[in-house]
Length: 262
Ligand code: PEP
Ligand code: MN
Image 1 (cartoon, rainbow, N blue to C red):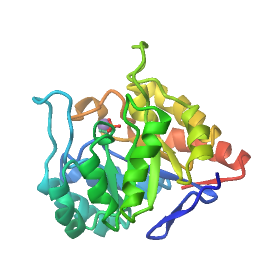
Image 2 (cartoon, helix red, strand yellow):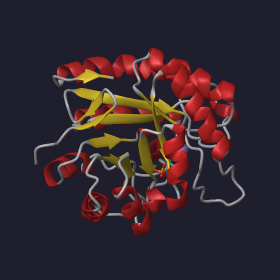
Image 3 (cartoon, protein in one colour):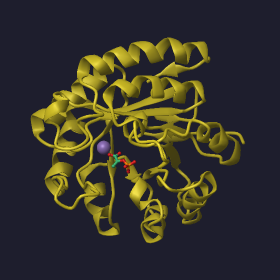
């Protein structure tokens, strides 16, 4: 199916550019967020990701800064001009996200089946970055996207982020075949998230390259100034040098495919 373009600010998903989305798993401190934003922007990232509300599997894990995290995101957007992408976990957060200047609402893997949340964002005019449920088939994923689109909002980006299989050496199994399947079966741009699939920083680059080679329109990567100190997902987060090295490898690959990066 022909991929339609989704424009957010001056960034176009589904066009010639493979859009680079990067940032920490969670917003932790002003310094952490600002330093990461500057580092990823200097490498060509157009969108800053960072969770203020974190849907953690373990209820005693760091749950995010909530409203304070949104405030820090808004501040860093003013300083860097990056677009903001952050995860929404409940319909009640929508007004605060609008006030903070969030550009792209992320629906997390655990909420792909949350149909009331899908309907709520489907009535909004935010762009929506919908992550595949880690137990969802490609068809179930597309049906979740249709919940959003049926509300009138078809500014969607679909993200493959790994599925649960018997394999435990990676955090999830990166389903690279989902990229061409989604591009064939659905009209929306497709992103890949190698970070959550890999679970380990050293596997992120190879999976990112596989995703781009398979036709992804965007790549989302977790980056942290000091990954061992991260409050969430440190093991899979790239430091600034690792992120720069990944970008240097992705650029020629994108070019060989007739695309640009960033
Ligand atoms: C995230 O992007 O930080 C995240 C929580 O991802 P997922 O919903 O795919 O687990
Ligand atoms: Mn994460």
